[in-house]
Image (cartoon, rainbow, N blue to C red):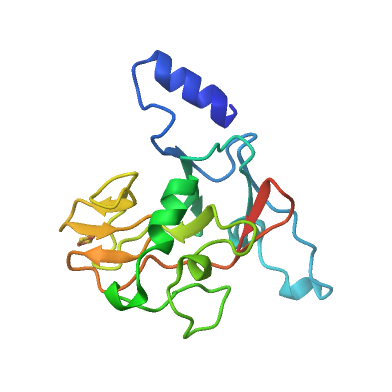
Length: 194
Ligand code: FES
């Protein structure tokens, strides 16, 4: 089932609207698939198929319009992918670093000590609207809710941590911004995570 079919299906059932996140398990037809990974040359060192399937995933994000997000499962964890609106990006950009509880980008694709600017948290120049993060609250690991909370970013209902539209912790007990895994766009519409 494609993302848009799922939306139509859930909307017809009175379920979540387009803006609500969808949860797609790894391997679900069409939306998420395990990447075909080249076998290592030394056969004895070859990890088994299930390990490879979890090592990285490719996600087709072509159905995600601005304002929509998707949650996928990667290495047993939820990963949030959000196509942010221009307004959401502008709001995040307008926040001075000095106001941030955690001024570090926490982006595995960048330098360890990089500042948590909106650009450093996003998919980068030209793709600032995209943000990809591990969906695990940095307090005690609950899964925050998307498009929620005071800043319209994410809200963790467990103990009230509030993240902004760049996934940066702004209020509550969580000590760090939501972590960003290794990922890359392999085309305009496909993201490889891991
Ligand atoms: S686990 Fe998220 S606020 Fe405690």
